[in-house]
Image (cartoon, rainbow, N blue to C red; front, top):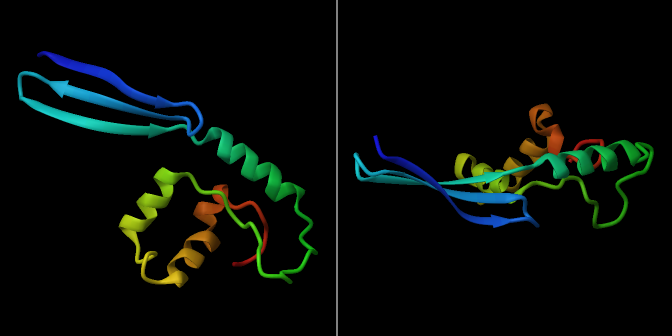
Length: 107
């Protein structure tokens, strides 16, 4: 089996690596994008914990989440988020997606 993996590109700012996996025997290639979200997760947790829950929602702008590009596009593919703003609110209020939240409360 002549299977080869090569790093095509690495973006240190986005913490994203793009890999090429090639199987010469099968004549197939796969491009894989891998993002390390550790920094975003840690930053989000610190911002979430530093936010006073008693602060209201007055005003027009509130940072409620920081979502990596790869996760955002995954959400776009799997939901109606591009067509329905309620889909984004549902995702941001989902306890399973809490890692991306930077502020407590409901969106």
